[in-house]
Image (tube, rainbow, N blue to C red; front, side):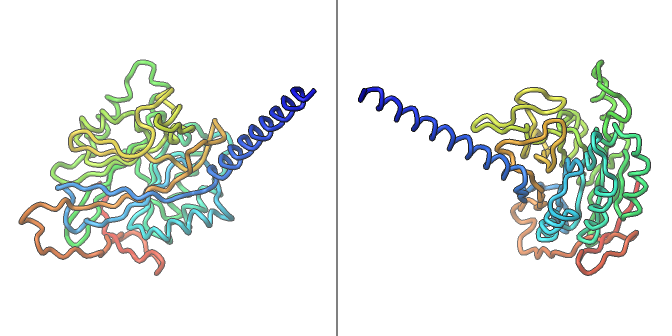
Amino acid sequence: MKKKCKTDQESKRCIICLSSFLITVIIWTLWGNTALEVNEIAISSDSIPPAFSNFRIAQVSDLHNAEFGKDNEILLQKLAESRPDIIVITGDLVDSSHTDLDVATGFVENATAVAPVYYVTGNHEAYITQYDVLKERLETAGAIVLENEGVLLEREGEQISLLGLSDPDFTIRGDWFGEVPAMAAAKIKGMQMQGIYTILLSHRPELFETYVSCGIDLVLSGHAHGGQFRLPFVGGLIAPNQGFFPKYDAGVYEEGNTNMVVSRGIGNSIIPIRFNNRPEIVLVILEKRQTENILENMVLTETAPRLSQFNFDAVSMRNVKLTIF
C-alpha cells in the first residue's frame, strides 16, 4: 500500500514537472514571436569612404503583413530609436496568402518620416497579382523601389553604390534547371560600377556564391526566417530554397571581400510560429577600417547623405543626395 502511494506521488510530481515545462515553453514561444528586437552589426572595410564611417542602415525584412502595435507603432518606434541614415526593406513586405496593401504601404509611409526608404521585392511579391499596384503605392508613400537598378548615395563629396535585385521568381519560378545564379549574376553585373563600395539589397541568401563572384562588398538579405526554429549549438532548422539545416540562416557571412548580412526577419508565413528565434530589425553600421597612417587624426562626422527627390520632416534628421543609374 505504501509502495503504491509512493508511486502515485512520483507520478503526480512527474505530471506537474512536465506540465510546468510545457507551459514555460508555450509562454516562451508566444513571447518570442512578438518580442521585436534590434541587433547591431558592424561592417568594416578599407573600401568604405571615410565620410560613410558610422553610416547606419536599418534593415526590415520579411514583414509578411505583420503588425507590431496599432499601425506598427512598436516597429516604427524601434526604427526611430535606432537613428538610421536609411531604411532598407529586403523583400516579403506582404504575404501572398493574406495580402493587405493598406498595412504594407501605411508602414512604409510612416517609415519615410524616420529616414529614406529603399525597397526590393521578395518571392511573395512575385506571387501576388497586385504587385504593380503595390509598387505604385510604395512610390507614392515615398519609398524608392529598386528593380534591378542602383543608386549612388553621396555624403561629403564621397559616394557608395546601393543596388537592388528583384526576386528571381519574377523571372523563373522554381529554378528546376539551376538557371537563377547565372541570371542573377548577369543582372548584378549590369548594375555594377567599378571602384566604388557597393551594397546589394537582395532577398535571397542562398545566392551568396553568386554575390561573391560578382565582387559585391556587402549584401543585405532575408528570406530564411532565421531557420524558423533555432536549436542551441545547431542554428536554424529549415529555410525556403535551402531545406533542412540551412547554410545561410542568420547573421554575417564572409568570403573574400564580400560580407552578407542575413536578417531573421520579422513576420511568419507558411509556418506560423517561430521558436527561439525572435523577430529582428538589423542595424548595420558601416566602419572605415582604420589603417596605420591613413586615418590618423581624421575627424569623422555624422553628417548624413542628401536625398534630393523627397523632403523629410525634422524626425528624419537626414539629407541625402541620390543619383539613380
